[in-house]
Length: 347
Image 1 (cartoon, helix red, strand yellow):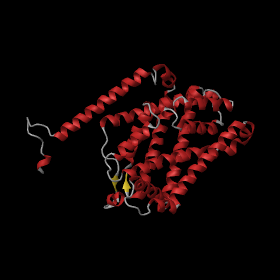
Image 2 (cartoon, one colour):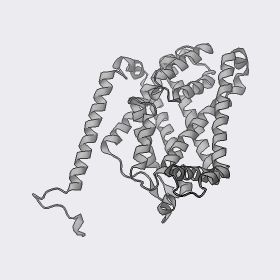
Image 3 (cartoon, rainbow, N blue to C red):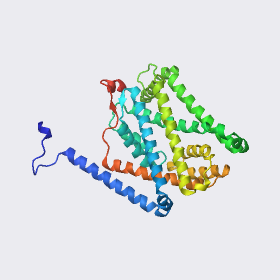
Image 4 (spheres, rainbow, N blue to C red):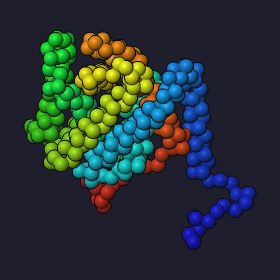
């Protein structure tokens, strides 16, 4: 047995590493307790607001199950996107990372807080590859948002009369189409335009640090141009995951007011989630409710704000799993999948 695997002798002083590990664990636990105290004091989720969901507990259980399936799909997408770069992120680690991100985005102030936490945990032990890891995670987020942008157009053919009679809805769809086209054009420009990378990589001494990072970002994005299978697979996973978001929101309507269920919700709900996904307020809080309420009233529905609040409560329940993971701590997130890939990415 190796000497360093032997247990310490009784009375021996713990190593600095053990003390540091214990201190960090205590800090995480203290932070977790503080977060729970903040949630209880702020009244983000009150017992009164949960009463309806407790009564409709079968619907709540179904919604949580769909939420977990959605998280699994997102985790699988993130894991896939690391493969073309010669890096490995296991689905389990990706799911833990996603759950922690969901917790922070659901509860804590700060627009994009969950994404920042995700970037922190994924890059903190990947020195020399942080630019690539961060680029993949931002690109992963962009694919998810692009899938949500194009999702309403799957339902447009079924609601042409409604769109014709509601000019504002038609204008919103045109704006979303422009956003999706702009996001796609940006990707194509960065992935296939050699002149941009050539301009940044032109010889000059000394080479500015920002140009080095920009070249690595563009090279990472161009990798997906050479891996269309991974790209299309990630987009397909995103679409399925976003369909599950619609399903969860419909379940919220079922729990709150089953009589108000209508097929046109399938067109309205993804539009509302697009607005809710914009980083205007922490987690879209307030903006999302306003958008849902306006969209529901615009199309002859009601209860939009309450529906999204119900969705937030279920998201918060699932997000508490992320709090548990955060308190326990996470080990290294991204690993090289083959020898020499770390040196290649760091160069």
